[in-house]
Amino acid sequence: MKKNCWEVKKCGRQPGGEREKELGVCLAAAESRLDGVHGGRNAGRTCWVVAGTLCGGKVQGTFAKKYETCEVCEFYQAVRKEEGPNFEMSIYLLKRLQKEKE
Image (cartoon, rainbow, N blue to C red; front, side, top):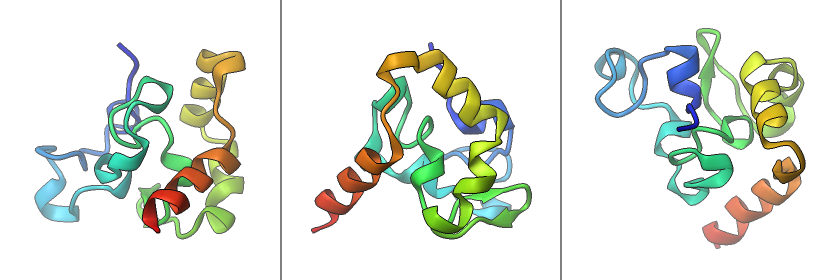
C-alpha cells in the first residue's frame, strides 16, 4: 500500500486525525478529484498541486507559489521515484482539477 502525504509527514490533518479539530482537514486529504492518482487516497500523493495545503506549519498557497518548495520535499521526490515513468506531471493534474471544476 502506498502512503499518502499525511501518513509520511505525520501532520494529523486527515479526516479523523489527531490534529483535525485543532487545524482542520488538510485540503490534500479532502480533494477527491485526484483520488487514486499515484495510488493515493484523494490528493494524498499529489499534494503539491493542491492550493492551500499546510506544510511546515504554514499555508502554502497556490501551485505557482508553492511548487519550488514542493520540488525539494522528500515526499514529492519519493513519489516521483516510486512512480517512475508512470508519474503524472503537474500540468496534467492541474488540468484535471480545472476541468472537473467547470
